[in-house]
Image (cartoon, rainbow, N blue to C red; front, side, top):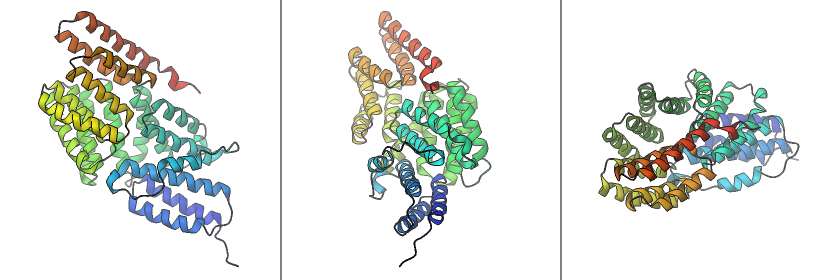
Length: 376
């Protein structure tokens, strides 16, 4: 009779596999995944270890969907199939497996742009954080919390988490990808605090690091964020230059943030009053958002169409706002309300201009409240 492999041995290898995932080392992660898959079939029965394996397959796929272009990714189990495997009822789940189950699901919801759901799953994971002794895993948790709170414009909460994460990653040479991502979030929070002069050096540092490790995904993100910072400082022309660099990379590589970069580039071109080029990029962007099944940016392209192409179609703009409010994405409502108000102001339509300023103030109030983000 063939001797079975001890589950503890396979568990050690899964942990090594996870280390490679966190380092975004795709070749090493793929190699360890293959080794684990072979050993799982020859392993002694251990249901907890099998769940650990399924959770790591899910996390592995999240890494690939973030880092690799869709047209270059290996065909395997879809993220939805993997999610179904780990979503079966497990009432007795606790400890480390419970933490991973909630944490990875939060990451999945974040990538789907379901930010409130993501935070809810992260908060459930946080209840198990005290058992996590691995400092890198602690940094992972704080980074993901910071990222989600940044999107929801809970600036001070985000900054608290991101500085904790950055302090850890900055002491570990193998985590340059996460270090760069931390710099993005730190800069974004400074922008939200209107400290753009403090944001820009962090973004320039992030761009240098991204070029150093030749990570095209992060280079494009750095260009995108630098563009946003220059726009915040009132320099639309420089913002357009950097946004175009980001779009060039994303169009070539087909990263999953392509709809976002095309949306932002289109918006900048309209603000620059370069209408011919804006409409050209708009058409590409709207089609791309639908191709990627990106409901948020499909909706935001409809907003651009209503505002600029249909000359401020109020009814369609309000439909987009309804979608954003239902999903509690108040940061976009705040930004877009001001943009619409300014368009009405240019037309000397003061009544509608004031109406959208009130919507902006309403969004700001909801952001400040942030009540739903702190419920347990």
